[in-house]
Length: 275
Ligand code: SAM
Image 1 (cartoon, rainbow, N blue to C red):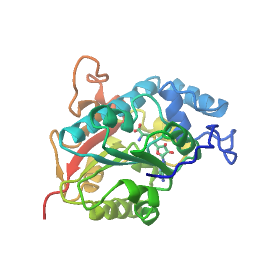
Image 2: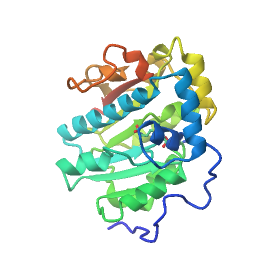
Image 3: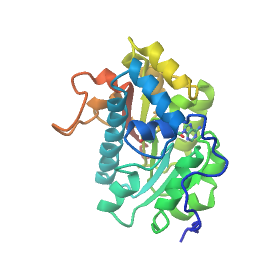
């Protein structure tokens, strides 16, 4: 049983500056959540003036997250390490997972104190899920974390979720090395699911998009080839690394199928083969 802080009753940790926008709260507001401040909402309104479909962009990513989790459950995965998990909103990984397998375990990791505080409140009565605050680049701190190790057994297949995260790791060497270390730790039969802003997806509005996000935090879009490099020797499942709306769309509720580049990202899932 993972120890949890039951005293957390507020979603705003004391150290959080309420006048500086954060990527996590901006994404929350784009998705219709309410864990955001005036400065986040203003940043989004400015972004929407240049990129009116940004809400759909966020939704497309969230829909990929759901399809990816269901794919992983279909393939027998019962351990999920979701890094850059964000502020909980509708359709969180543990909710999708536990609806189908209550015994499966989920650990959320995010650098944003608001995301972690709110996740902790939400997970108080969830023995099979935990949240920790860490930087994805601090691989050791995450892989050696007590809560992570109480829940996840890296000797068995697990899913590493890096959804809409790695464009925040702007240094290429650091980004590739970081992901390499996680992949090395995963057992054969594990999966990695990723979405990432793609240079091919933002030809017209690239500059605007970059400026919009850079106002909050630096980002680095990568090409399909550069995104593919993260997958190393994993076997990438069909349909490969594609514009996110086109990754196994499920039906009439999917959005941006006709304009998939407006999702701004590419997505894919790879499996670590047996040695
Ligand atoms: N993965 C969720 C999803 O797809 O719905 C949330 C994606 S949100 C766009 C990106 C998240 O990554 C934010 O919550 C942000 O705080 C987090 N993040 C950014 N840089 C990070 C880092 N270096 N380490 C961990 N999390 C980070």
